[in-house]
Length: 201
Image (cartoon, rainbow, N blue to C red):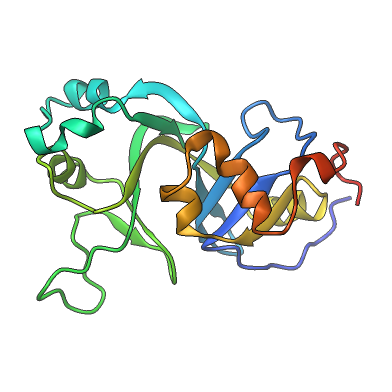
């Protein structure tokens, strides 16, 4: 019989997979939670390369990279999660343009994460990036990670995930392969100090 787990809002938090996570995709992952309510949660994994370079992705979208955006060509696109793997998302710093009114966003489909970053899923942000403009700091990911009502809270209660307030430096200033360790460091932890058994404290 399922037990009810109290709702705690993890919006603008990192979920950090515990060593021993059995899910093949989420093992060793850091997830930035973009949206969380009692009904669902949605986030983007920020440390799993998708084996796709940005140059190839923009080429498939018929968006040639302008000379001032050429340095993006070899950067990896990330695997944001197992849901909608064909859909792209751009996780970026907030866009604050002159003349924007309260609640307005710079792009057509942007989710503002309260106190945190923005996530845009419309083509216009990719067009801006390809032209050498757009957000000053961003990640491009394919797919996302979602949980149903109570599912995330249950996984955390079982010890599958650690949580920490998100730090944009981990996302934008840390090499991909070091983000898991840096995220653990936000809690004063190292992976070698954690027991590999999920669900045991």
